[in-house]
Image (tube, rainbow, N blue to C red):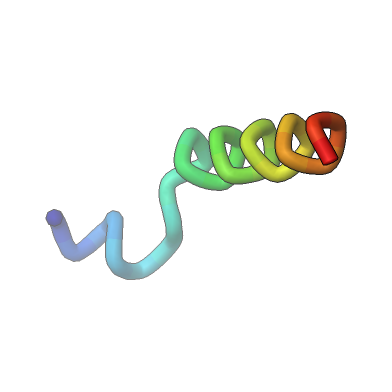
Length: 28
């Protein structure tokens, strides 16, 4: 984990989290 990563979260991580949340919502 680099300092840059700690300074601002990875956009990919946020994207993945959003996708998982959407999938979970769809699955119910």
